[in-house]
Amino acid sequence: MKDRTGKNLNSQEIFQKIINRFKTICLEFWLMILRFVGFIPIHTIRKIFYIASGIDMPFNSTIHIGANFFNPSNIKIGHDTIIGDHCFMDGRAKLTIGNHVGIASQVLIYNDEHNIHSDNYENSFGPVEIGDYVFIGPRSIILPGVKIGKGAVIAAGAVVTKNIPEFEIWGGIPAQKISDRKNKNPNYKLGRPMCFQ
Image: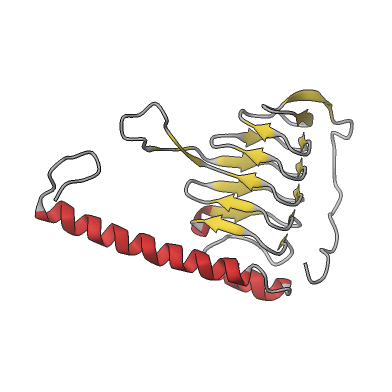
């Protein structure tokens, strides 16, 4: 038996490949279950499943309906954070989301991508960190290895490819600085999430 690069595998490598494939299929099955759970219109039920899946999140934070994940066990969400409907959160590397963070609908957060310059088209992982009091506008995309500083604002539809300093407002493709956020000492709470969302 050979691997995808044509290298011959010994019996121990073949056995390890079989075990890894089985684990991957089990995770993919569980991600399908989480996708179904993501459409249950009751926050508490979804939170129980998400926490049981390994997402480190308190009960005063919310993930709205229709969320999707890769490897939820590497995702950590802070207090009083609201994540909008149909968001995607990648946990193949560490994803940390701070306190009082507002993430709008259909935001995509990735921390893994393929290395298009590699002979093997291998994965390239990079953790994503989102600071406290950040707001990310709808349909924004956050790419691997990005750190978004406290109080930063990402405009709708932005593609974030590099680190964003604290209290700056960024937008565009690729995202660039637009201006600075005036409130440098936020202390608000996001409030109650919408019911049945």
